[in-house]
Length: 226
Image (tube, rainbow, N blue to C red; front, side, top):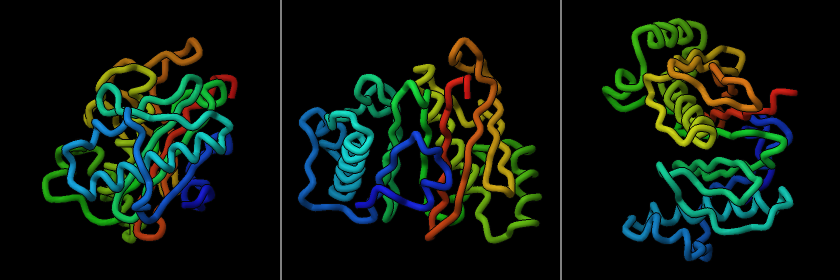
């Protein structure tokens, strides 16, 4: 387990504390409040969930917050301690948590995916014709990037940033996502956005990186004064 990861440092600002693990610890344990979420899961799912929660508690400790249980709440979102925002992600060979104080960061979205093609039919389900045309254009400039997987991951990060601010579902079709070659992406909301610091958010801006066989996307919603 490590608290400094170059990929996460590239996509999240300094107020956000991150912790990463690339292997599961068989000795790690869940808090009682967390166990129900994976009570019926297969062993591999329980292991990755446990490691990701262990990362989250380590991140809370680094932040200066009291490490505590992080149960699964509404719409499967993590329930963080009072005053803390955060996000958790896990995929093959990678588990990570990102946390920040709410007075410094209003919401965090984080997602990691294996850097490979989406299964057949998934891109059509998560994007529209305009988004797919933009991905084709980007692929002409950077054929080494799996733009379909990047778009999917970035929309996952959008949802993870959106839900704590709204408590509402957001469909893949509810945000028009445009990645850029410079490692950023812009997600324009097609539905009314949340109000943060008295202002409506009409879009989320984030960053992406491809490294070590992964595509990682992230969003940090900062206070309006920033």
